Length: 422
Image (cartoon, rainbow, N blue to C red; front, side, top):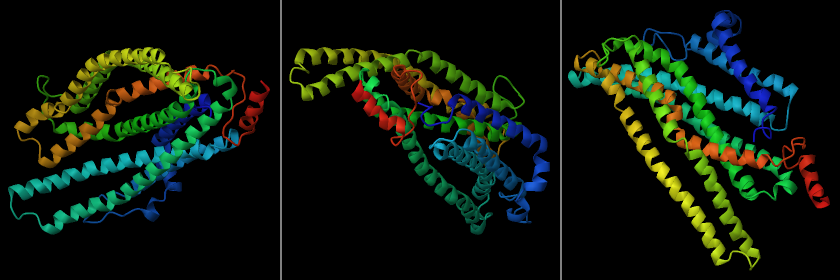
């Protein structure tokens, strides 16, 4: 699954994590000193003015973004020389590119959160004091956010296009790897489904979850300090009274509760999904045989296979019934948690409309990141079942077998001759 696309996965992924930690430590220890030598901020940053004393594209932000880009692509350099496969530009450079775009999208979210404060305070002023806000100021704010969002939308569309190609390349690598061992794997139950369907599902689910997970981590890095600072405006929490960084704790406890709840309630689902694919494969295989052999796909045989599949589906539906009760109850209830937490501050008039919007948005970003597992649990269940099937499928490949990385690979092209000889 990973070996076919990524170089030395057991080294690649831990090294990526260690490099990230190293880059963060280097930033905190020597970021300012490096900026004096390397930063492009003085040349391309927007300088502060009386009308805009804190521009979005300041020298500090330019250096931060430059450092993130440099750190990401410098990680690719050793892999180019150490273990460069034909998928290097997609698996290594492509992965870094996708993560970089996710990070910058989070930064846009942080900028928007700051913009909400001033914009909604302007709305509150306009509603309470008619004609106190000019059309120039109001529509000027709208144009400001448009200048930022239009390029961001363009980048996200291009990134989605790139990611689609990235996933197809990964699927292609997995197909070449498995088909190189087709003489052995063809005897495995549901072999065609594993190669044609499960490789596509695995690449799509893993990439989607990975992007969401990385986005959640980056969102926490950016928004946790913001939410902690905004929590100073919350005078007290119901029952508990004043709490330092109150909303951070509320978001953490809420997300932890939901994650544990859904993990416990849905603990049986991955195994049931795995069994479900097995009975589906048996039914489909018999139908395929019946296309070419008249003695196959007899009524009694198909009836038995159908009832086996039906029994597994009905068992799966029963388990999903109580899982969905817990899931939807938690997700709906979580929407009211920030309102309850801010209740005393709202009732005492301690918050302006702009501040309320800032806090609500920052809380939502942090809580959504904390409850990544809870929100993605059904997708994770699907991934676990696909992973189990592919691991079981891969177990039939000899451990010392040569790996094929593409359809033009010599290992793949020679595999047909090996099968014919056998």
